Length: 304
Image (spheres, rainbow, N blue to C red):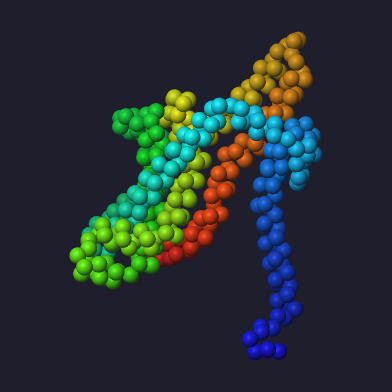
């Protein structure tokens, strides 16, 4: 046998067969629900209610998407969500980067007390009512700031940034920059940020996902429907169609059974169409950031 070739025994083949089988099973368990939701969203309502959809769309159509996008509030919700997500992500990344950078400096005298204080906030919070009172006293009720400023600093993300900086960027770079007349701001913007692309991509993706999928904060702090994000709009569409079924069902002798069934079928189809509409932007963006995401998590999670 060639010297550089590793001999694979029968036990190794059995082991690899078991590993590949388990991996294939796990891939199917993750991939099939996504394929099913996609296929169900493009199927006809009657085929969906009859349970005829398993893998591919049955009687393909765009009825569910028409019902979603014919609602003008969806487009406004998309615009609001894009604004909230973009602004919130920029704020989160900047604030978290500053916090992680300060905590990474060994000469910072309050490093341990501040880190202890931040760690406590990971286990305890003030609760919904005190938080609401604080937001109200700050005059942020029914404004976009109520959605992007609370939680702008993530302790876990700051720890990842701190560890990444400590384990990746040598302290000698700051000493060399200091000899050339540079200060901490020069070090942050000219060296740390350009070298921290992987971990910043992790923070940005995590923050963007959280802002895009968030609905509870908008439900609590927003009362103007023109400012509702996409998730609230989609929830309203689903609730509205479900309530129509209840109105038809309570119509007594004049109840239109055919119309009620059509509305029920459409409400079931809307569930899958709404999932695709709300998830598609993130599914498109994630592959472009995946390599940074994996690298940033692996490096930033090491103890410094």
